[in-house]
Image (cartoon, rainbow, N blue to C red; front, top):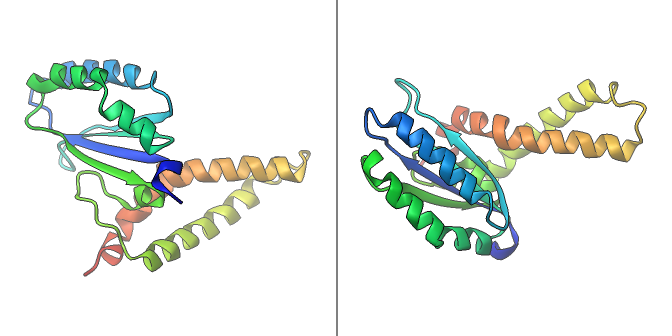
Length: 182
């Protein structure tokens, strides 16, 4: 699939100066409100620092196409909001652009290394196999009165959300030594 036709994710990580966390949180609220107004914006997630695990904020912007992402990344709005945060952060942001399934196989705060395709395919297949069987077993009895296509629609939507936001980030961390071994 061409880059123009698939969703694109930008992962931005940045360390906030000590004592500036509440001002940075207010800034985050403002900039995420602005990015929502841009065509093709699919969502924003923020991973906040955790004591002893990681010290940076990770902001994940998702857009439906590369062109819509590019419009945001080159916008005057974005440039304005970045200047507003300069006094709150320790350095320039680290920016990674991901598209398609590679967004599932990236670790926040780490340079993007794409694992071999056969490992990506094998791990994705194993996770989808387990998840689809688990969701079918749990949800089909609850949805039994609905038409089969609606049941399939609901289960597949839940599966994609779980894969993207819950399962694959954890599985990627769990299998990172195998995925990224040299």
